[in-house]
Length: 76
Image 1 (tube, rainbow, N blue to C red):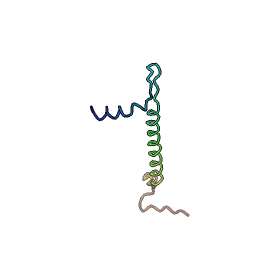
Image 2 (cartoon, rainbow, N blue to C red):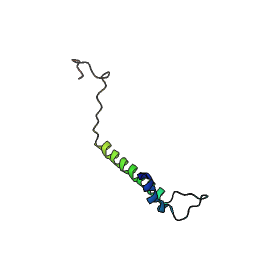
Image 3 (cartoon, one colour):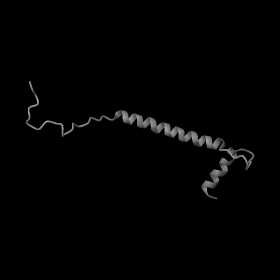
Image 4 (tube, rainbow, N blue to C red):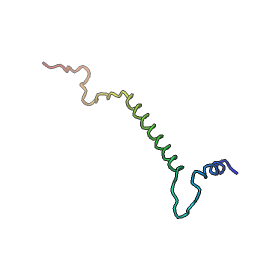
């Protein structure tokens, strides 16, 4: 017996006492998996938001619109 089969045998009672082949629902195990995924996504979004807030990005000036070296930019 593999470890996966042993784990599934332990989780089988969570599926319920009776098994009706005409009415199959995810049950409590499906809810727990969905809730774990939702918490994981929430944590990743929170972490990404925090990291994006720390980014200090200043765009370099466009070299095409910058004055040439030695050119006088002050006009009176």
